[in-house]
Structure formats: C-alpha cells, structure tokens
Amino acid sequence: MGNKKGVSLFGLIMLVISSAIGAGIYNASEQIAAAATPGPALVAWVITGVGIFALAMSLKSLSEAKPELTGISDFARDGFGDFAGFLSGWGYWLSAWLGNIAFATMMMSAIGYFFPVFRSGNSIQAVIIASIFTWLLTWLVTMGIENAAFINTIITVIKIIPLIAFAILGIVLFKANVFTAHFWANFSSNFTYSPATAVGVFDQVKGCIITTMWIFIGIEGATMMAGHAKKRSDAAKATIIGTISLLIINIVIAMLPYGYLPQAKLAKLSNPALTYVVKDMIGPIGAAFVSISLIITMVGALLSWTMLPVEATSQLADQKLLPRWFGYLNKHKSPSHSLWLTQILVQIVLISLLFTDQAYNLAISLCTAAIVICYALVGADQIKAGLQAHSVKKMIPGILALLFEVVGITVAGLQFLWLCSIAYVLGFGFYIKAIKDQGRKITPFEWIMMALITIAAISAVVALFMGKIGVS
Image (cartoon, rainbow, N blue to C red; front, side, top):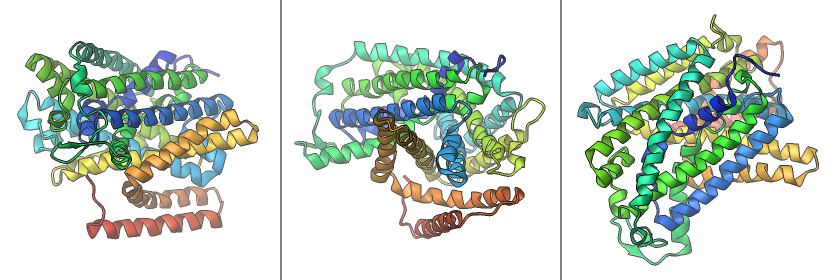
C-alpha cells in the first residue's frame, strides 16, 4: 500500500536525521567532557550505539511484520493491550513537545552569538521570539504534513553540511597527545586526575548516558510518519539508514573536540559548546558559521518535532484511546486540534523559562525519561514477537533495546521517570472518557495500574516541593 503524494524514502531518512540532530549534538562535547574522560565516554557511546541500533532493528522488524501498524504506540497496543498503547502514545506526545522547549531555547542561544540579548535563551526577548516562531511552525504544519516534510528535507540537507565541515576540520587539527592525555583516568570537580578504577569508570559512563540517550531521541520519526509515506516499507529502511548515519555523525562530532582542547577547558565552554570549539580553532568567522548552522538545525528539529507529537495523539484518537477531538483533521488533513493544544502547552512552559533556569533542564530530562517508556515497550513487543515465532534471533534486538532503556534510565535518571508519572495522571481522564464513549469499561488491571501511577505521581509532587528531587 502506498500514498503517491506521500513522503519519499529520502524524505523519511531526512526526517529521522533531522528529528535526532538537535540541540544535543551541539552541546554534547561540553556535557560529556564534564562527566567523563575519553575512554569512559567512548564506552558510553558504544553502549548507546548498541542499544539504539537494537531499537532501530526492533522498529524495522515490527514495521515489516505488521505494516498495517503505524507509530510506536501502535506496537505497544498490539503487543500488550489498550492501556499500554495509551502509556506509550501519551508518553511520546509528552516527550516530543518537551523536547521542543529545549530546541527553542537553544535556537535563541545560537542567535545570541550575534545578538547578546538572546544569549541566555530565556530572556524576555528570547521567549517572545521563540513563542512567535513556534506558533508560526504550528500554523505551517496545520497547512499539511507532506508540505512540512518537504521543507524539513531541505533544511536537513543544509544543516548536515556544516557538521561534515566541522568533522573534517576536527580531523585535520586532531592532537593525539591531547586525546590520550588522561584517557581512562578518574577526575575530580577541579579536574585533577587519578588512576582509573572500575567504580570511577562506571560513574563516568553513567554520567554520560542521559546525554547520549537524549541525542538519539527521534530515530523513530520515520515509523511515526509511516502512514504518510509513499510506501510503508520505506519507513523500516529509513529507520535503519538514518540510525547508522546518526551513530557516525554523533560520535565523530562529540569526540573530536577531546583531541583539540584539554578536557578541563572543554567542560567549561559556554553553550552551545561546538560554536566555541570552532571559535578556538579558526576564529569568530567559523563560530558564526556554526551558529548559523545551529539556528538552521533548530528550525529543522522544531519542524520535525512539531509534526511528531500530534501524530501520537492522532493515532491514539484513531485507536479510540483518546477522545475523537484529538484526531480532528482540518481541510488540509492535519490534526489541528492536537497541534494547537500542544502549542498552548509549549507556550506555557516557554513563559515559565522567564522565572527559572531549571525549567530548561527539567524539560530535557523529562523528555528523555518519557521516551524511555515508549522505547522500552517497543523492545518488549519485539521480544514477544520473537517468542511467538520461536526465534531467538528475533528476540535479541528486543532484549538489547529493553535492557538499554531500562538500565540506562535506572542508573542515570530514575527521578525524572518518577516525575513523568505526574503527566500520565493528567492524561488518565482523557483515556477513561475515550473508553466510556465506546460503551466499554475500564478493566480491573487498568484501574490498578492507574492507581499505582497516581500514588507515584502524588509522592513525586511531595518530593519535588520538599526539595528531594533535583532537576538539573
């Protein structure tokens, strides 16, 4: 089955890359350098690479086995029932629009290289411009998904070129002695080094994981847009090609600065770090070039992530797991109700940035934690598919993906998963209404799960107000 006016294979690949290349890669070198020496950082990248590739293989396998399913919430629902589908879809929607907050703020910081009033990313001027821009993007997407995807393809091609240029520059200026100076060492907060220990290496790897997980959020973009593809089979191909491309791009861009600047200097760079690495390499003109690239990157990421969250709520409405209001399509066949509701929430959080710098850090961490639930359910569904087919080969990617997501968030960001329970409770009312609108009843298991999540949410609110949960 196909859609002659839909998104091409190349467009889907560009969507995967554009969705996942966002603020993270431009700040990765500074964030990772603050957490680890090169050796442990590479270990974190290898672990993340295996986990993310396993997730991509799971998405590919499930897409090919059941081409009638679109989106990761569909996989969760098919494998584990309606409530699992709701948890996955609601979490995906939450993760995607929270990610937009980070992108909008980083875009303002990049503009701040030229106009210092925007440099903090959360000044009044920055919030006003970011607000206007996100409203314009939302309007664009309401005019038609395929049109927006075409623009996204152009933006992605443009923004990859500067990253390739930086990679070439980084290789030319690479200093092996700087890269290997403290390759496996432990280090303190003032960057004094000591011999490596197993505990020290583990702690450094753990410190990198949230950053590396955040950087890869979005690889499911092609799967989420499968319903708009010219050929549904292209979604699986695009996921694998896009993931391999992202692994290469992200590791190269994040690790090359270790071979140019000492770790202590790298870890203290201003945001966005890549801008100031290039400034040190070739001067202000190079930094300006990177800043322009970052602005384009953020435009592409914001466009991609304006499309993706409403795909989740629209699919949930189609599956009758949310009220029909969420799935309403305008004359351009865009889910305008979901788009405008999501934009209103984005606007509220953008305004909150005026009052606290922590809102940005919380948005990034909650974005990562929320998507973990979705990705873990994909891995679990792949394991189930392997069990049903009596195929260990099919089970392996699911096992690796599930382990990576569960262990990664447990060791690096369990508190943020705890906080996500609050947002799930806010969605339970919509789920209950959707089920009752069909004349169905909530099952005892679903009531128990909602009760447990509600208890977790209440305890999270209490812990947050008592200062027991940090958000940075």
